Length: 186
Image (tube, rainbow, N blue to C red; front, side, top):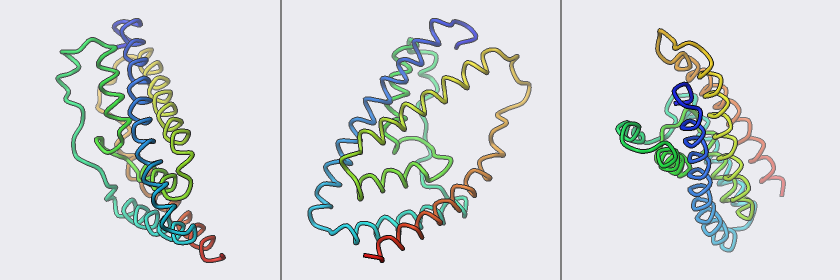
């Protein structure tokens, strides 16, 4: 889109940012409410152990190439039927909900579990930051791609998914151990 029209591409990216921030705000409210209730009924060491178990499971899932996600995407037909700003808004809202898109690693789920169980008061900061970083990454990649000739082969990032999952899996396992040790040292 940026290659065809800078104005349309910019409207799309701004819509993407607004959509992601709206959805991440909605998700942050849910994480805050759930986390506050859980914090009221469960002491911190128990929540830390639960977080460690969840992170351990996510790390194992990544190592087994079984990152949890739903196999669906925003309908591709929207690209042809919606104006750029609205398309970005819809796409961003879908991405910002986290549950509705494919994941390459479980890092997002680990962050969501940790913020909900351990520090729900930071849910908007964490999820909002994730949304902004995601959109900035898309924007940088889009600008770089719009300046290059079109590739003759498909997406070259696919081979990296397995490597990313393994690295994330090992990192999540290490994080689970650190979290469990911290919980058990109480």
